[in-house]
Length: 146
Picture 1 (tube, rainbow, N blue to C red):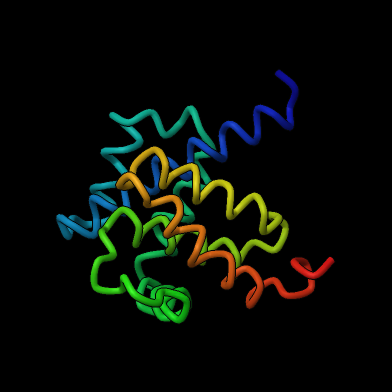
Picture 2 (tube, rainbow, N blue to C red):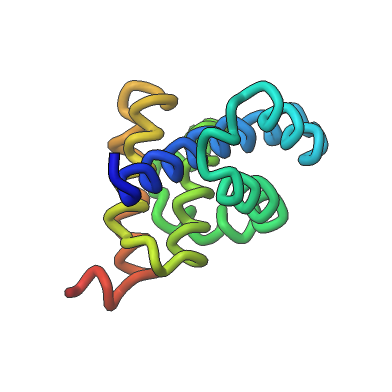
């Protein structure tokens, strides 16, 4: 496996574990440090991009309300039916769109859809795609219109 493929795999693993950790944080209200320790010791975070996992774990919770406000403009009919998995997938994607311009918007979109297919309800990936498509156009206007 080449370095780029290894990097992509590790980043994907970090998103996956961050989604699980943020879900746990949202439902349990556990301290982030406790969740971090649990994921580092028992969930194999070190086999992925641990630094990126920690960034997502520590940066998203304090910004959760602002991230929610950002993507919710594009949630038309199912706002009250957002489950914690979809919420955290959309938070991760919104965070990446806003804070990581080096990650192409198509990668952010594809990763979010992949997480929704893996962890969400049956039609979750369609919902996530429907919210993120216009959000990408809004937040990455120049990149989307290339």
